[in-house]
Length: 523
Image (tube, rainbow, N blue to C red; front, side, top):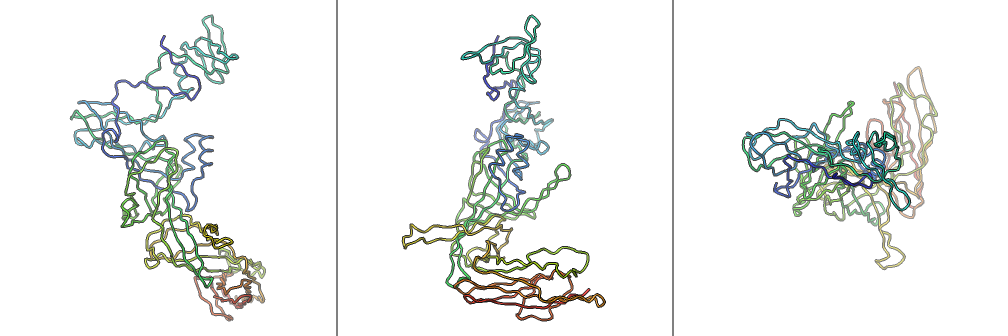
């Protein structure tokens, strides 16, 4: 009896699939590598941690990957096929494990009008120890178990594989083998799969060699942008420059590799209907075309979105994260350091009416936030669509001496950059100032219910404990009601939106600045 030997559950089993035409991919004759277009549903700056991927595979295998890798890809592959006249069975095994079967299409580019697909199937019942043994129920097998330094073999008819191997020997006795590690099996049954497989029944009236294109969508792929910025402070403590570089990270956990692929990234909000009415929106992301870098990303409009194509082929291995430069570093971007004291730092909710409670919002914070602002303009060295992503900012610490080797870039904060078109401002919140503190207090409050008015006086103090002059913006949120009027203020202010005003302060070293204003609400 011809047998197959296997030692462990994960051993490789070769399936025999006779009488079927197998497709060769582009490397063997298609002449063109795959084209992979990736979409992403990640929040900017979120990324995909490696430990989350490992945990997903450990707990639920491929079924959990799509919930971690938030995105998908469309894949186009070009194949060489030898087709006979009439009906042909075509199998393609180099496809993703997370393929969406309803998106699969097959087309002969050689004879599109004389070739048609009658049926298509996606087969994913992959071989493994349990799946293989199920094929031998009610058949005779030999099972080996460890016995000291040797193996003890038992033969019989396989009755069950649940909770152990259950055999019936020739005398009718039932035996349970719970620690089986070796198996001797009859010839391998037909139809077992080692990889996800696409199967088409193709009819053609033009026999011979065909170039075919298959297209499908797969989960388990995503991308995002990351920026690295190096801040150099200016002489006045309120300005400086940034050196900015950007990278694209691409995760492929789809279950397939894509060698020498044409890579495309889609930017825009693309709706895609999911089961249970879950609707994914594909985050705004963009790449930038650099005229002097043909191998970088090139941008063009595509419907109401943008499509970005890498100017060279790249390989996307399965189970990998790849980084590709988004654009070359841009040096010496002028920027402004801004300190903001937002004593309330609260969002407005619909409270259903004026907030007449005197103590509401009375607890102010002391933290003064630090921001960097720069212009995404051509004059600043940019003027490009900047995709959403995390911006990590560092500053050079020169060290103890004048030796440049002592200088090191130290992390000073990070923020999330939203999709930013050219000629727009970028504002990054990096942290809180150590030597500048604020204080906000209510000094007067009264309500006239008959006249339906309310008046409140607020005093804000900002103390500069630094040794240099510092600019601070005092931001006040008029949270009690939508109808308001400033009846008196010690400083000029700017109305930035319907319920926010700002007071600019310039503080000398050691100086304390004060702002007092009275606001009258009516309803």
